[in-house]
Image 1 (cartoon, each protein chain N blue to C red):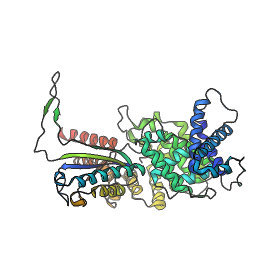
Image 2: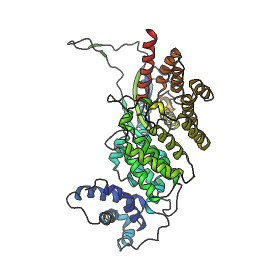
Image 3: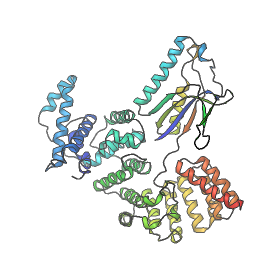
Image 4: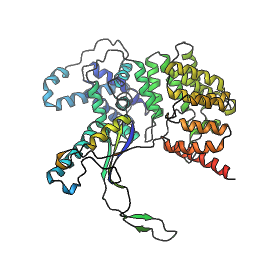
Length: 135
Length: 381
């Protein structure tokens, strides 16, 4: 019973095996990919392991506090930012091994030529509440 | 009305339906419906026979649900007749449900969810909130668990240690939400202890009580962790400690030691010390020796190293620690603490920061970061 974040990157992850940008896929390949992702989420809900999943727009802005009484400063997007998150899925599973197995399945989503993308996904455990028994 | 009353009757009512021939999954749904109805109706008009009331309502719900399913028409004819009394139970009904819900074919998270619903009488929504997952996900987890155990025979005794592991998980990994899972785990363990005479069940109950008694003192008002040595012992619930100690002593007198009794013995020694300085660390080390013999778990060895550090000095603790893999969770945090006790503050500060980086919980991370910051501030002076 632990939650993990499966992170998908637009940029910043090591190169996938089947590394063809999505805009060079055929429309059918894109549909197959979207369907795979949806089926994956549905399957996780049925197994009682799904918590949340969201996709993010590639572009956002940077914001920071600029002092009392002043509006926040906004800037960006910065093209040089190395890491760009594309979306995430949160799962609630019995073990780290299970989280890795599920990330592996998600990484097998079909891409160009209907072949698995083999893309690198990041698996990050949530920090939990402390256990009751500590000593 | 006693708010817990309907929920405390859950397992026995469910068992009646199953013995009358209802399948477990459908019976469980019907009992949940009856519980919801009880919560609505009983405050106005409490029944004279609460269990009989619940059985009647749940049975009616079960028949309604079965009737609504046209494909089950044939079975309905059979079930609609006045139920014949089932065979005399070989094992206590309540106990039987604990076994079923902790069946080895279930994953730990499924067993926990099913136990809380079918034995504890909690709603799916309450369980989902307690574990911070969507209600739809929890509903699927529970119905999958019910399908998994649907073929399990209801009249065979199971292994009580699987039940204890599930209850321990509920107690130890209870998060937040509108349900106090630690208190619920204690209630369910108490109910189990009433159904079966077993020293390890008593040991687990004692362990839970002894830890629960210290709960208020474990966190500061700002939510940060307070280590055992710095807890305000005046906040400890002495009544609960006394109950835990009495249950433990009775269990130990049976001379069938198990891991929960030994863990409870360690907790009892902490609870027994008027101040942290008066803790009987020598005896605690002896109990950890027993635990190492019983479980040989690396986590127990790590805790033992801490106790050795207190009993025989930090150097002895560090020597014990050196025998263990530094990949163990909390290994670095223990090393940091022992180096600080040994007076090597720069090493301790570095290790606290490293331990914070690896901490599995937010509260521990913040605590360890504060320890590093405290030492670093002192070293700068």
